[in-house]
Image (tube, rainbow, N blue to C red):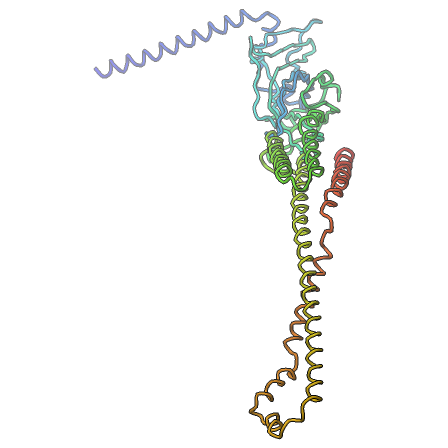
Length: 460
């Protein structure tokens, strides 16, 4: 029983294999019936897994490009997205046929031919258009030359230097290399030099203009060998008009608006504070909005950041100017009151000195009259003056003591006077002069800084 089951299994396997062989043969016959006789002769004995001139040196592949569009250029991701027509030409001695006309084949027949393994080096993502069919072109010439064209949309990395943004120029590249064939197997070249790339003259970009483009041929060196490489360079210059209207003009007008406070009275505290705080907050919002379209990594000090920083400094300086002027106004008023108090105090001291002098003179005159009118005192009075225990002898002692506390007071007063004089040297006699000077200093400084800024970033 087991032998009959095993025999039936073997028979089933043999039957399935025969059916598969017959279906493959029928498919080949049908495919052969589709191909014209010329293509059948060319494909006879053709091996698509072997490159042309397999034992007779490298095959040369010529490249040309048509730039259909550059859709986006992103500073945040540092890349650009472009749609290109890539054309490759090479000669395959196995495809030589008689005649004087080329054969244009369906793009799906490219699966029967050998094609170069070209790839875009810095591509982040790419795709081949397939509406309504895959956008491929294959054309064979009588001398064996093959033209192979593709329509590709690719996103390619582009290293950007944003230190002069938005007055910058960026040079991006499109690099084509062979993935598996080294320079001993395949050689790349541009078919018409710099004219091998077309379409840039009529290209319209949102923020850029294409200033220059050129091609170059080089080699890529890796651990596995040296590979052929073609490089297309194009230089993009950013249009600054948009940024002038969007950022530079509003920030400059905010600076001018902050100067309006110089013509407002120092006593109008709410008006001047309102102008200063409003301009500072508006400038901060403008700075934050300008950074949203730039890379998050702040590795670049960009030109627009420098200008916004300058404008913010002038606006903040105008606010600080009012704080200083208002403080000087208060100190100026207090100093007047203090000087008035000093004058009154000096007048009181002078009057006290006059009264004291008059009293001392009258007291000395009375003493002179008393000895002339009365006789000399008794000996007991002399004893009183001589005796150390008498109160009359203890009264004159404080008058005869050295004036040490008085000298210490004079030293302290002299020190205070020196400090007051040093403060008066930095004191502003008229606080209104601060606003008068600021009306001239701030605009002139802003004009000079602008001249230096635009000269440096436009010409250096």
